[in-house]
Amino acid sequence: MVPFSFADQEWCLTAAGALFWPRENALLVADLHLEKASFFASHGQMLPPYDSRETLERLALALRETGARRVFCLGDNFHDSAGPERLEPHAAGMLAALTRATDWVWITGNHDRAAASRGTLAEELTVSGLTLRHQARPGATGPELSGHFHPRLRLTVRGRRIVRPCAVRSETRMILPAFGALTGGMDAADAAIHAALQPARAIDAVLGASGRLVQYPLWRAA
Image (cartoon, rainbow, N blue to C red):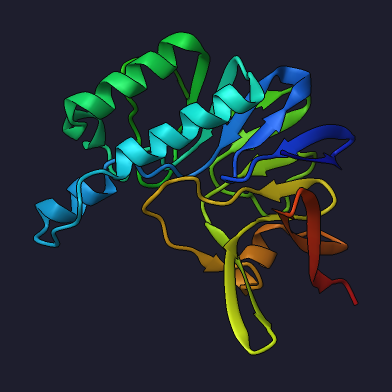
């Protein structure tokens, strides 16, 4: 895990893109998109039906790594509102075990307005002065954590194209990378991401590399 400071608090970013909040002993993840493969299969695009298992295995590993007792899922938890009913028994059992073992909160997103039976459901939530919501709200004041955009940093290094999931942050707000196993991504430098974080003086991409926090400037106020 890579420690860093944000909004006057300490955090740790896991290799898989989860955010650990020591003060709340909480793990935050965004955009699981569980049952995305089965959604596409129902529309004729056949994909291997194991994305939910892989995502939940990664989530279980992050919980073991951090010891977190709370989980905040920041929206688009399932790829669609019928996703919970499509969970195959193995994945359903994994999710039931995880939600039994922790204080679990589902923040709703634009893809899902429902969640699995266990846990608390909320449109947004404020915890220790930080607002947790699915999509960053332009013009909002105060610290905020969100998801929705699936940011990815795109770089060319020595002629090689590199794409990595990343967080994007301003002084007081941060957009988490997508945690789901079957999720695409938006260029972290995209104007839509920058507009969502305004007002800001600076916007940076943040990711862990070789055990340290790497920060790439994306935008600076004139």
